[in-house]
Length: 249
Image (cartoon, rainbow, N blue to C red; front, top):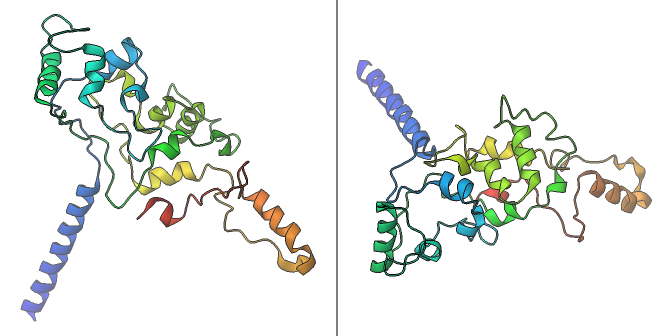
């Protein structure tokens, strides 16, 4: 009997530890990893006013935003033989030139990460129609006290362009070292909070009264489609943003 109890306790502890390990493995990096080059977004994006998508060239056309290839850096800094921009004794620029000379990509360490079973298409978010948000979803934004509130994120997203990057990733333009700003970044609830602010999402599966009869079916369907924002201006169906298959493979 004692052996049976101890075995059960051992199994329970094993399951608990395994669960904790899996949970920790799924969490995004809370702190910035050491990068191969000390790249400052504050200098490039704020001081030099380089747009996010000048370097992250795939964000508006692909699933991944993409890390800048060495050629993007060389386009501004030039080569070691023909430098264009170089600070006095800049060891970091020398590293860029070394990667270029060796024809090797810069091995950047990924900071913002999501599980492999989740798809986040950057292009769809960068190009999304901001008018699909519920009216007033951003009204309670208080940038002074809580700039990372849901209302403030919606407000940033509605502004479009590079500001949409800030909505998810925080104000990277002011960061010397990139870090994750939201403790729940990329967790399902973090995504759904924004998805539920889109017109018709919460009402998508709400059925209308069927007592109108067969002869009013077309009118009923048109009423339902309008209520849940079923179709966009081009006549195509808007995606179901709370459906499992929207985000998961």
